[in-house]
Length: 567
Image (cartoon, rainbow, N blue to C red; front, side):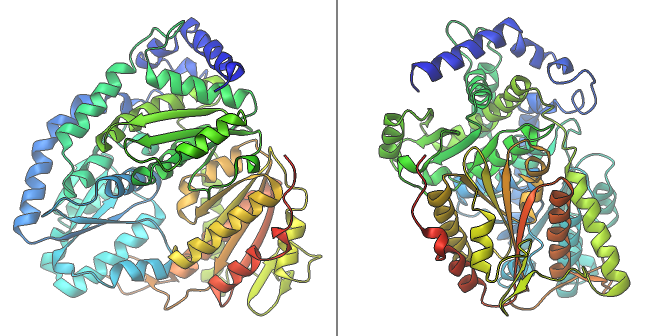
């Protein structure tokens, strides 16, 4: 960072020390964020995970040993958002130790993606982890009912319970179901921990044990981060990495650099998916917010707007972005480099980012532990589903344009899908950002097409371009989209199921079904689109009826790929 950027951070650290922020965080002082204690005093349990988690290791070790002896080889985690992203990171970062269970995280209602996970399963060797803090998340419960019934059909009523375990809060509906259906295990987490702050709790550590992560080492590293994050001396020299990170995030946002762009060593790339939810859902409300940009295709330094702040998580030995960071610094983009000597330091990063996000939210003046706008999409989704059960149709809306392959909504003057996109983004420029919302199967072909589109839009407009797969992003960046103050352009993609749709059972043990996964996914897309429109946001929607990858690539190759705008 240049002298000006460094001065911003130094002044912010002095402010944090003057306001005694570190000691107040550890004292659970809710007035750091709000005049009321609601959803703060009962959401700070994440500060203390390393105090009680080591006592759980013996039980987790016994669980894993029993599964190994019985021949289990795979685990499928059914969860969303805070319940799924930390396990996803741990699986991607550490892989699977020999003899342990290969973990697959399933956090979608897309029927093609569900079928792809189910196809190779040997139910006799598979454990299902039903993971939800609230115990009632619609996506998680739909997946649970589907796989419970499939497992029961394969193995019989007496054996099915042994293939399930639950992670939830005490007293939740899931806790009651787990006991009634005789799950192999029920793990009750500290209810004073919010989902996106739960990486170092049972929600992260149970899956970590199953894949063979050394929990003693992982938690020791996390405890070291906790110790460092208690340091109250921040100025003139800061000895607290979490405070330094939080001060930098906050200072940059307050000076208009609110697009936190992650450059992450390939072995750690999935960490960005976890950090994305933590930052977006914590900060994006009350007309404010930090915009995390993860997995964005790399561009030339001159392509990035002045609203960018770069964070480089660099694992020792992986030099992927070293030259880019030098080039970015030469153009005076602010960059924070966070070096990691080995993969177990990801545990430290979990805690540092949790603490830093809470500090940054104090600096920009928002409540970091609630998600006031998430319910809007859920309510509208329920309304669309109610319409479907009554009429057999989700929506009576007529597309503005239909070329036989793609239906377009939100562009009445366009005559082609490509023209619709060009017109929609004609005035897009920093500090606005563009959000691609893909209720699509996450296949390599689809991902390549969408990443190509991200690159083209950035080159043409200079805007940061985010990509979220639905419904995952509803639990990740959805709060920011609706509650944040950033000027944004939302481009939504939906499609017909690419193969066979799958029925969502109304309840376990019953073949009765009122909706399919394809219907649920489309209702969620329509619900979120309507929630954005209700708030006055710009939304352009493409519904692809056939030729999914081809249709997406056609948008990328349109006139949008013309000359870049000067920044």
